[in-house]
Image: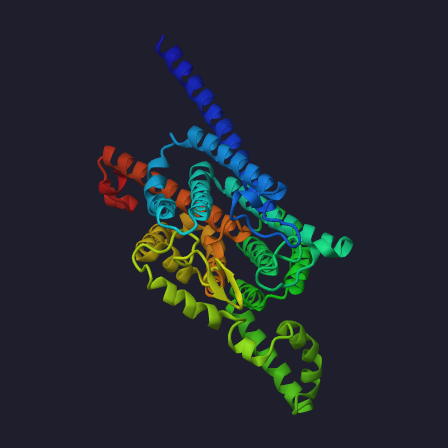
Amino acid sequence: MKQQKQISRSLDDVARSRLELHNERNCLALVVLCFWLLIVVTFTFPGRHGVSNIAQVDWTAIAKLLSRAVALLLLVIAASRMWSTASSGRVFRLLTPIGLFAAWGLVSAAWSAQPAQSLAQAGCFAELALLSAVVAVTVRTRRDQSFCLAHLSLSLLAVSSVLLFALVTLPHLGELQRTNAGDGVAGLLHPTVAASTSSLGIILLVATRLCTGWQWTRRMLLPGLAIHVSVLWISNTRLALFLTAAVVAALLIGAISSMARFRLAIAASIIIGGYFALDPHLSLAIQGTEPVLHHLSRDQSITDLKGISGRDQIWPVMIDSYFDSPVTGHGFYVTSSAGSVRVWNHEGNYSAHNIWLQVLVTTGLVGLVLFVWGLLRPLNAFLRLPPRDADPLRGILAPIGAWLIGWGLLNVSFVAPFQPEAIVFFALLGLIVGRTAISADSSCHATAVAASNGRESRETGNTHGDCQ
């Protein structure tokens, strides 16, 4: 009789495990569907402006709103199914600071000169924070990580592919040209957004390939690089080109052995020395690089280049605007008390073109503290994990983190609403938070087992206090 009860209990446990696994797979499918919904709708149409009032709502705005509403519904469904997991408490604690920043952004609409704008953009940020939480409680295994990163890479590749196809077949849609302020975008995407999408796509593919060797990375690597590099070159964003080259070079150098690096340095020295001996005046180099330099200059003058494409004009304006409301800011994604500033001979609610300045001006010192806390808390917990728990995410996070830091110096980066880079950032944030929570739970379980067997808890590298 006792044996039958044990068999029955075992069968119940197996059935429960299969049901939980099926539930996890369904929730993971909802998550990757949200990736696609949020990334694909970043497209717009030539000459279209953003919506600042109800009169400007068009079919594109309605489609974007519906896609975001559907994504939010899917995230809520996935969260309700998975929030009872063992790691959900830790996930909630690690993401509390970024959630408080999103809440502060929503509250800031009360004093914003454009309350609808602040509510909408802070709501977008809150939805992305929810995306991180759902990713954290849904992605449990290396296989889940692979599935999640594969769809992130595919969605970025889809954006670049559509742009490249449109450029060849419908040039007026695929055009990646910069327009005057206030004229809207010239094609489906602003060149800066196209550049960040293709640049991140390249780095994510290369980093994942070198760190994991998953099969999908081998199949996607060459066609993905060809498409992304083409879009990156055509979009002609100098910072994206530089960051991509620097990060990919660092990845490749880090992937080879010390002896191979030494041989590479010797070969480079011989080649460079030989070239200087044959062409001491660098005439061939000047002739060969002249078309490239002309393309990269975008017909800008030396003064424009020294001013970092006009940022020397907008940054002083934003700093002055910050001191008008230094503690609470002007409202999420609103950079002045009046709701618009005059820069580059146009009036508008311009971004600060720097992620830290953007957060400071729009949400004030309070917002900046919450934002920094929201970034450092999960990152610090993740970096304290042992390598066996952090890999391969640590190798993927490092190059993308370096890219985001560099990109944020001249752009608002992932604080911008539903840009592909923002979706990649919050997905990765969810991955590292989930990995941290699972590792902590495993350590606590090992501690409890060791304690129940009369062994010292320090053998597991944790304490009972960490498991509360």
